[in-house]
Length: 270
Image (cartoon, rainbow, N blue to C red; front, top):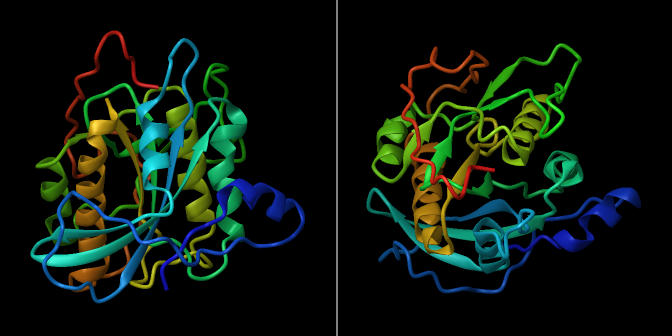
């Protein structure tokens, strides 16, 4: 079924012991990568963006999240048409905002999301591949219980040439996602997905693919959709491969070479 997650009520539902569900969504029309063939299934993607940073009038990541919420798109990847339905939440720019996604994931009832996508502003379109165990502003460790210094995206870049496909659409960066709240939400979410590996699994048997995407404006919405479509195709539509064990190595030791994103001086990555 199509879906919409009642995100504004999710925190209250968790507190009350009620698990929110991913269900029903209003039909939307997408203008990026419209496919010509019906999709075999509907993919459910959970998205977060941020509210305006201090001193900013608006945040494009939050704007895109609001536009996507409750809509569906027919996207194309490798000549396959993918029906993608979005549920989104715009988060406050503080530590509570970075904790929300990790806290809500264990309480989602079936069907669970097929992908988790976090958005942030301050760079040209960039997929962040790693997050660092450093809390925003304080510089303290996010987790002190033996958690690794670095965590890597749960997206399987080696599967069916996904890395090359993503590179054609955006920069891939093995940095720390900005050392701000973007990095913090990414680390907390990746850590939670790993802790939930036995209970929150994609139908293909992988850890739920989770990525952080930096962007510059709401015009990057189509780029975000294209990145998600490629990821869903490689993870679920292409022939499955063995379950991936995500690397927790420091940046630079993985198979993907770092490509530094071109940050705009007046909009430092957050």
